[in-house]
Image (tube, rainbow, N blue to C red):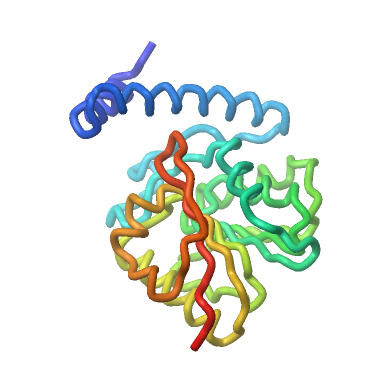
Length: 231
């Protein structure tokens, strides 16, 4: 039976998106939830339950509530890029309970890193990492830090975002990425789920990024970017 909160979310979607789109999004969300629970059980981890801002103690609303990346959306995004086995380093900004980190570690990345601001979510991710037994990449690091203050490693090449923050936090992280590329020139790939929500509205990304392609999903739009060559 739907909770009052879920009904309110549905009504708000109908008001904002129209009935047809709202029902498609809701149907997609239900399917994603079912897949998530099954996949979590298979892996022996717990990454599915959403955690609201107030539960995490977020007051400024720039850091967003926890919603796990859909398993199939992540796989589709990863299949759309070329991974250089043993070379590429994957970073998930706003890594939450660790689902994208654990999934990325099932691919032949040299190193996988998750950066999470919430101690509650970071601790959950550490527990899930201890339980996970499917890792191809054995060098996995979970960092409890403010993403805007975290120094991006000079070998980070694949950067993942699932709409984790907005405003000054997002702008600061983008500045840090640009500074990292300037200090250690390299080709990077950015995978951004729901790029249309804040990233493409708030950031002058076209100054330094080229959109390789995008595709729709139940969560909105997934966009893949590469950095422009430095002048």
